[in-house]
Amino acid sequence: MPGQAHPASRRSVSGTSQPERIGRNESAGEVSLFRAKTGSTESLAPSPGDSWVPLSGLRDFAYESARFGVEASSVTDGTWVGKVVLGKYEIVDRIAEGNQSYVYWAKNLEGGGDAAVKIMKEDAKGDPLARDRMNREGSVLEMLSGSPACPRLYGRYWTDDGLLVLVLELLDGMDLQAMLDRDSRLLDPSEIVGLFPPVIATLSEAHKLGIIHRDIKPGNLFRTWDPPGLKLLDFGFARFTHLRSPGEAGRVSGSPKYIAPEAWLGKEDLDARADVYSMAVVLFRCLAGRCPFEHESLVQMLKVVPTAPRPALLSYRPDLPPALDDWATIALAADRDERFDNIQAMWDAFVRAARPVAERSALAGEHPDTPSSSDRGA
Image (cartoon, rainbow, N blue to C red; front, side, top):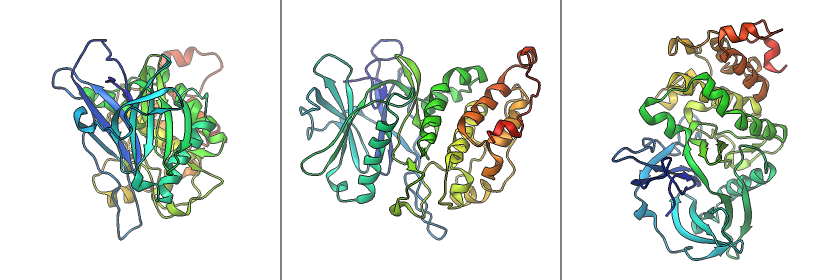
């Protein structure tokens, strides 16, 4: 039985045997799993949340943030167990279940790395939207193959009876949300600067290909142990900017705290700046211990995110460089035309603003502490 990972893993941080709990992330049929190693009774799995809550009377909104723990014994299933996929991955156990798919752990019979096998459910194969999302996830993973933060896709195929199968790499580690939930942890700017470059590079590549992720959040950023790094997960909500999906018209996909203002307003012409906003909220959350806007009411979120003044980052972390407040003002701008134009410009400005004042002053030829209009990538 594997240990901690996305979708599963094989070892704990310490390498010792510990109790296990499994957490899962459901997003309208898109499943990612991390298995959280626990010490004694402490669980690393996030708290329960909402899953695809329709907001009738305003618009057909849909949201995903279900995160909860289930006992390993409760997800054992023999339907696919024992089958071999791609000629070398033998399915050992089912490790997660979503609305429209299962995820299995598969052992590599040739002695290499194991795999996570994601299989569409029987009752989902007749749903065009579900088929499109899962197939789109495979397409994006293929297009981003080799990108530093993109999980490897070993294979994708349809079974004779119309089920889509994705065979993915198995990752050791835990998601960023689980890390932040431990003792309400805050990250220092230096930690962020060392951790996030692979994700920024992958998003930059995706945006150049006309792909926007649309569901960037700590739960979809996975901290791997071996090799150490950060992966970007769950491309089921990704959108190709040159295409439109009729089945998703009028819906807002993502997790409420991380959704860009223009998405809340129902704009159909979303672009990379929606991901810029979401990533900025992630960085704000890592530093401040909370998101810029946190309301239980979705109606309230709809009201404040597109219009309310942005909170000062330093009001939560007065120890941070003041320039980070200026960075946040631009990165979280309600008007996307006032935001950084691209993810790399947003990140470069963050790195400059996060440097200690003394270090920044010592850098030859670099004077302004405040991000300027040129920093926005214009």
